[in-house]
Figure 1 (tube, rainbow, N blue to C red):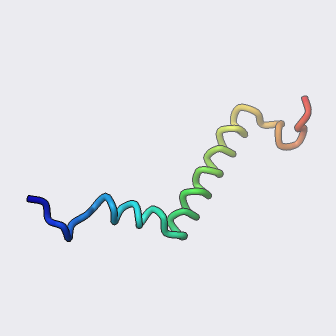
Figure 2 (cartoon, rainbow, N blue to C red; figure 1 turned 180 degrees about the vertical axis):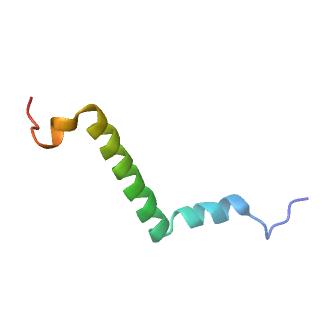
Length: 50
């Protein structure tokens, strides 16, 4: 029998939807994408048109 007071997936989804968590995740994803793009196309930031 499941314990109704221990709904861990629901608590985890509520935690992920908090504003500070969303801010950290979005900044991390944006910085990671910038690093990957900058590693393969380093001049793209200065010369957008090839």
